[in-house]
Amino acid sequence: MRLTTKGRYAVTAMLDLALHSDSGPVSLSDISNRQGISLSYLEQLFAKLRKQNLVLSVRGPGGGYRLSRDRGDIFVAQIVDAVNESVDATGCKGRSDCQGGNTCLTHHLWCDLSDQIHDFLSGISLEKLVQRQDVREVAERQDNDSKMASCASQEKITAALIG
Amino acid sequence: MRLTTKGRYAVTAMLDLALHSDSGPVSLSDISNRQGISLSYLEQLFAKLRKQNLVLSVRGPGGGYRLSRDRGDIFVAQIVDAVNESVDATGCKGRSDCQGGNTCLTHHLWCDLSDQIHDFLSGISLEKLVQRQDVREVAERQDNDSKMASCASQEKITAALIG
DNA sequence: TAATAACCTACTAATATACTCGGGTAAATA
DNA sequence: TATTTACCCGAGTATATTAGTAGGTTATTA
Image (tube, rainbow over all chains, first blue to last red; front, top):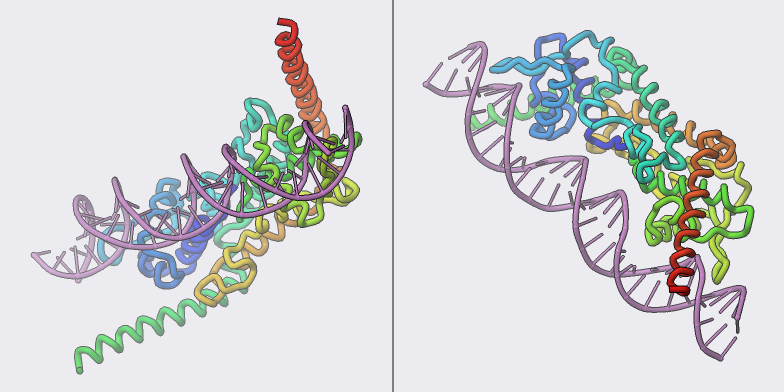
C-alpha cells in the first residue's frame, strides 16, 4: 500500500477544484499556483482523473477542468484509487497468493486493514471537506496569497512598462 | 505513508515467533524457511525490532529470538512503527508545514486517516492474531510443509550415505 | 492568426525497497 | 579447546516508484 504525495496531490487538487468551480472551469496553472504543485505533474495526475471520469476538461483559453459531478458524489477513496493503483494493504492484491501460491500468515490482517482504510476514505466526499472549518481557513489564506502574488507580478509589469 | 512488504514481513515474522516460542528461542533460519523471507533481510528487520525492545536475542547454538513480553502486550502498530518510520499518512509528519511552511489544504484529512490506521493497528495484539482461525489454519499448513521439507532433505542425506 | 490551455510522450534525478555478500562476534556443545 | 550455531554489522545492488522536466501537438477563443 502506498499513500504518498501522489495521492495527496490528487485529493488536494480536486478539493481546490471543488472550492473554485463556481466561476467556470479551473486551469491547472491556477491550481499549480495556489497549491504549489508542479504544472506538468498536475497534468499527469489529471490525465488519470479524467480517465476515471472524475473531471471534465475544457480546452482553449478560459478552459480548464470541472468536476464531472456534484461535490457530494465524489469521494476521497475514488480520487486516491484513480492515481495510485489502490489503497490495498495486501501485497497480493487480495489474491491470497502471497506466499508462493499460498496464503501468507498475515494475509487476512492486511485485508481487514485495507477495508478499514477504504471505508474511511469512501465516507469522505469533497462536499464534506469543503464544509470543514480547517479547510475553509487554509483555502482563504491561499486565495489571499495568490491574489497578492498576482498583484505583485502585475506591479512588476506596470513598473517595467513605466520604467 | 508506506505499508509494504517490509512492515508485512516484520509482522509475519513476529507472529511466527509468537506461534513457535513455546519451545525455546526461534532461529531466524526457521522463520526464513516457514515464511519464505530471506534470512539476511530478516536479520536487518530483527535488528530494528530488537532496538525497539520487541524481541530478545539468544546467541549460540540453539539460540534465536524470543518475544520481549507477553503476546498480548505486543501490538501490530508497534511492529510496523519499528521497521517503517511510521504509519503516518501526512507528508509533513504532523508538522503542518506541508506547503512551504504553511498547512496544506488536506493536512487535517491525512491526520485523521493516520489516527484511523494507528488506532486500528494498535488494537491488534499478537495474542489476538494467534487466536484467529485463519491464522491457525495457515500456521498449521506451514508447519506441515516445513516438516515435509526437512524430512525430504533428511531422506536425501540418508540416500547419499547409503548410495 | 495569435494566444491560451489542455493533451501527450519521453526522459531523468532521487529515493526506497528488497534483497545479497562477506565478514565478524558471542555462546553453547563435543 | 575446537567447532558449530546463530546473532551481528556494514557495504553494495537491482529494481521500481516518485516527483518532476522538457518539448511538443491539438483545440478553442479573442
